[in-house]
Image (tube, rainbow, N blue to C red; front, top):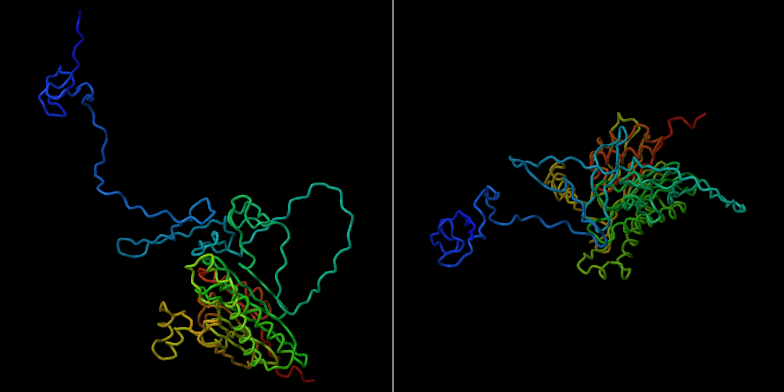
Length: 472
């Protein structure tokens, strides 16, 4: 019978024991290794040109919020980096809120640092609303008596009325917002009512905004108008800034603003001197904030035993315009500025910060530029709260000889217009006539500057009658 040719394996030695082989061997004569299982020599598989010695140390994935289906989003601005010279690499701002209207600020930032569901912070000046969809034909119900409308005038601020029609999502600008506050299209949680607030009375207006970096608005304000016993008008504005390192700072600022506003509205019509009324209002605000620390089960310890338990705390600043007087009062680093209508005359800052920087300047250890450039500059030395060292309300009274506007604000604004002259440059020339519009402009100025903090500003016009106006 014929014999099949022996396959050539192309080996000269056994791969197991190195025994010399002949080209026709099928098994190694020394160890019995099956030479037919050895692949025919040919082109070797690709191998990396640089050997990988140790596994690459990739960073851990971002933590996932409980109940979320995805990890927290990281944007280029969240990741530090330097160039070959050791300088910070530039990062491009990331927008997720759709096209920018002509003339609007193109910079958008993402929020950081909270346990709440976070989303990119849109420019609140570009709010979008749509008309409600047309209702399907249905039999009209029997008409019911129309409710009696509320009075059109008011003497104190109240919550804004809901805008007609469902809102478009601030993140995708396409989906409608469901009644639970989430977008039906992309699922983003929508800004809360307190994220942007506006109030206007005849003689005072205020605007408060969350800004572009914080996950919530921890500022609060109260604006009101009343009359003195002789019938002359009195206008007041209170602005409070929650201390972010404390527990429930948003509740602290809200409680302080409400208590101070109520105290002034009760004291001024009784004939209490405005400066004394301001002092009493700050004391009332402090008591309201202190009471928050005494509420059982409110410190969150039962949910997170490792969470800080600092007592709720905030700063406060306020002004009263009454009977030709301008009275201011404060504790903390929120401020009051005086900006005259005639910009040829100098503006002035009427408050002194309770802060580390202010103490360094007052002690002569640093000049103002050096102190406020230090990373400790905004560490406050006075605040309202149960753990405050002592309550030391500051009050002052002025009698301007010309008309102007009083600017009451948190550091979320004055960080972008710190000096009195800087503030005067950004306050619109018609602020006395259009206080709400001017407050909106000032908030926009802070947003354009970066919006790193919550922003709150109240504007109170101060009018001085021209000489001889009352003569015949």
